[in-house]
Structures are given as structure tokens and as C-alpha cells.
Image (tube, rainbow, N blue to C red):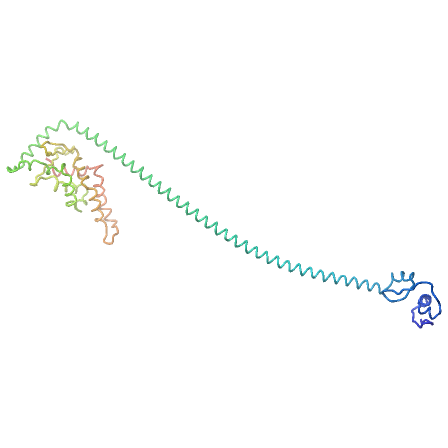
Length: 345
């Protein structure tokens, strides 16, 4: 509908009536003066009295649109702020991740250094423990060897004491036979050819080798051969018979007067007859002259090959003979029995 005063088009009759009563321009054309104060709506620019404006504002569509736009604008601002915050958060997260990675790398590096240091310390401790273990083992071996040597020494002393006791018993058992055997021994010496120019040379035994150990040592060094070593104590008996137990004319001066008891006799430098039970005096003289040392030098030549290695077959053959010589001080039975066969009266 169209207002007849201001030609404004309105939708309904009620709107038209309201328009005519309230519109300031329309009222002016109608020459009507209003006592109410007119104010335009800030949202739609329509003019109303103050009283009606309050009611209008509550239902003003433009207000709702504006409020909606304001809300949207606020939401957009909040969105932008949120995106900004999210961006800052992402940046902070990236920084945190980077710092974390750097810290992790540093931690891994420190961990590897600690592990390497611990391995090094472990290796040093193990090496030190091995060294201490080897020292303890070496000390124990040394103590063991000392104990073994002491036991061997004690054993040898016991064996020597037993030999002394046995020799004393044998001396008592054979004391009654001495004078009878001495008579036979003197007859044997008397039967040897005499040299009128020097009567002492034929009576002295071996030029008295018991008083000349240097001469015995010289003979052991020069005359003891591989053949003697190969035959063990029998070879030593043959060596003694050939080079020690004869005078300058080749006559035997050292006799076995009782083979069953291994009693040997000789005439000393003073012309007195001495007894050597089980040839112990002769055995000790040979050993003191370096018999074991010379045997130890010769023996390896029996089983050592040209390239310096050991021939095991020859070692098994000849080592028992060598050991037999080395152990003569404890057991000279083979030596004295062979000697008895070679020089019995």
C-alpha cells in the first residue's frame, strides 16, 4: 500500500497506519507536530520515537544480521587467533622436537662415551685380574716347586740315612769276614808283577784317585763317551774299569771281595786296605767329578735330529739309560753288580 502523503509503499494497512503516525517526514507533510523525540535505528536507519525504537530494536532484522555478522567476525578473529596460536604451537613443537632430538643425540653420545669408558675400565679390570691371577699361579707354582724340592731333599736325606743304616748293618754282618777276605786280597796284590825301580807304583790303587778328584774329573770329561751313556750304569762300570781302576801297568787295583754283599776293597796311598761297601765311595767320586753333568750333555745328542727336533723313538730307547746314571746316588745297584762281574777276586 502507498502512503498518500509521502508516497511510501508499505506492505499492510497496519503498517501504513503506523507509518502515518510515526514517520517524521510523513508527519511533516501532514503538517502534524509530534511532541516525541525521533531517533533513527542504528541498524536499519528507520526513524522512530524513543519509546518505539526500544521495541523495534528487539525485533530489527538488520540488528540480528549485524549481530550474526559480529559473531561471525568475532569467530573469524578467534579463528585467526586460534590459527596464530596453533602456528605458534607448531613452531614451539618443532623447536621442542629439535631440542629434544639434540638432547637425545647428546644423551646417546654421552651414553656411548660412558659405555666405552665402562668397557675400557672393564677390560683394564679383567687385564689386572688376569695379571694378578698369573702372579698368584706363578707364586703358587714357585711355592709348589719349593715344596717339591724340599720334599725331594728330605726324601734324599731319608734315603741317605737309610743307606747309612743299611751300611752300618752290613758292616756289622760282614765284620767277621773282613780278615779272611783281606787275606785273599793281599794274596792277589802279592801275585801282581813287581817293578824293582819303583815298588810304590804297583801297590797304589789307580794312582790314589780318591786323593786326586781333578784327575778323575779330567778322565770323565775326556773318556766318557756316547757308548758308555747308552749302556747306562753298566757303561759307567765299564768306563771305571777301563780308565780309573787300573794302575800305570794296566793292573786292577780295586777288587770285589764279596759279590753277594757288594763289598769292594782297595789299598790307599798310605798302604792301608780300605773297604768300599756297595761301591758308594767310588760312586760319589764319579758323581762329584761331573758324571751327571757329562751325561746330561751327551744324552741329548742320542735322540736329537739334525733339524733340532726330538726323535721320540730314540728318546724312548736311550732316556732310561740316562736316567739310570742320573739316579746313581739313590740306586747304584746295576753299577756295582756290573763292576763286581768285571773285577771280582
